Amino acid sequence: MSSTVIRCDGLTKYYGKSRGIEELTFEVRPGQVYGFLGPNGAGKTTTIRCLLSMLRPTGGRAFLFDEEVGVDGRELRRRIGYVPGDVSFFAKQTGRWTLDYIAGLRGGPGPAEAELCERLEFDPSRRVRELSKGNKQKLALVIALMHEPELLMLDEPTSGLDPLNQQMVFDILEERVAEGATVFLSSHILPEVERVCERVAIIRDGAVVAEESVEALLSKAIRTVHVTYAEPVPDEFVAGLAGVASVERFGDNGLRASVTENIGGTLLGILELPVADITVEHASLEEVFLQYYGHAEEGGGQR
Image (cartoon, rainbow, N blue to C red; front, side, top):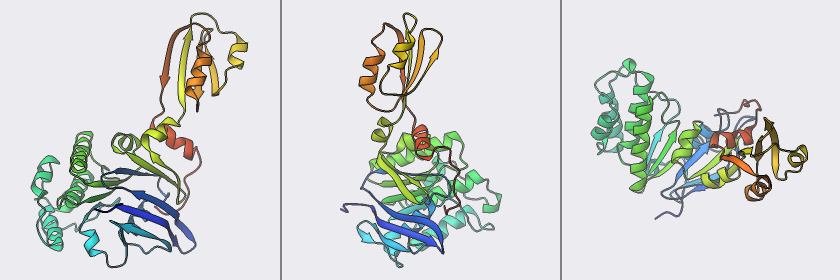
């Protein structure tokens, strides 16, 4: 069994003088659901295309199943299911023709094709040009999943789907992971990533700025502590609170404090006065993401 399913060592891609990705180094282990996060222009799609040998990197190396990615990656790609960020098919053909055509290229029918069409409520008899964006996305998902690949590389896989079909997609992914598949999920829909991913990398301006487990990433995030005291709070008590990034009053008895680290020590200080009520709100992955990106304008790099 491969020790890693995906490994990048200093992977770099430039488009002329324009930055695509720079010095990307990370690895995805067998059976992981790995989130690859960033806004448009951060380099997510460029990374996937380099991994699939659709683009030749400017520098660095990429490995799939411990084999270096090269120009001739046909055998490696048989083990992969890919949903691109921009889905495109032959408009005049039907979904049925498209599924049969892809199956022919792979050397045989996909064993899970009929089940996936049923579960995603996809009608393959219609022509592609008649399909809505959501139904084109379903067709892409069936193509990616029907041959039961070991690795799923999914670039915004639920784009255009309604909430019920989004739920079905993630149910299917969870089943595949339970059977041993690995998922590389590129997305900007952070609640989805928080729900399904075990580990994440955050990419900004073509470089990875954070990479760790979802649990560890969230543990470093800001928590908001809401406290209502049993009596009015003196100004000197508020001024003396340690470990808070910011604190504001509401009424005479209430405080709202933002805590970035040492939550235990900060709470001990907060609890020195009699407390009537207290709640601690954990940051979502979206709030963590904003900590890394702030309110800076999204750059003009490649996807």
